[in-house]
Amino acid sequence: MAAPGEGNPLVERMKGTAKRLAGAATGDDDLVREGEAHDDKAQALTDAQRLEAEAAKDEREADLAAREQAIVEERQRLELAEAEDRARADIEAKQAREQAKAETEAASTQQAAERQAAAEQAAAARSTTAAARERNDETTKAAVLDAAADDARGEANRLDDRANDLEEQ
Image 1 (cartoon, rainbow, N blue to C red):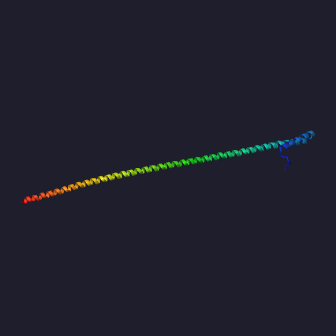
Image 2: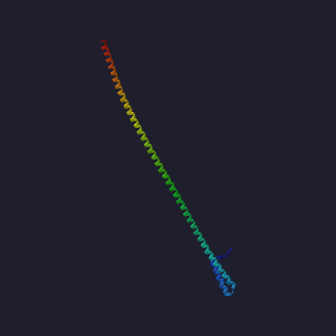
Image 3: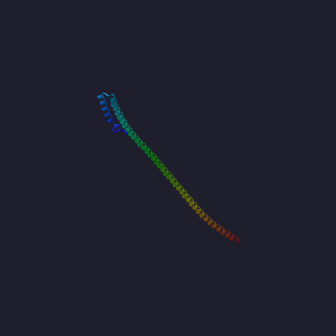
């Protein structure tokens, strides 16, 4: 286990300064070197803390960048999904319009066919009525002619009878 203050740059720097000064005052070069070693350790600890802080900062920045990238990717995914939804809705609306147009055209064609059929039926009815009228007129004419023929036969028979009567006399 580390002693209290171990790994603290300030403590190491204070130890280094104390040992350097004591070594310089007593002429103990080993103690001066020990003080310098503590100074080097303090500097290394300071550098390590600074590097750890930079690494932590870099890690936070990388996490933030990753989160921002994830947000950008999610936004793009949502925009793509929305664009797909809009495209699908546009296609469905176009299909609905085309279906409605086809149904309208079919209904219009059906109505035109029904009007044409009705017109043809009306023409056939007029033709049938005209033919019936003409037949009726011809039947009437035939009846008149038959009556006239009967009258003429009757007249001819009377004339024959009279001629026979006149011959007999």
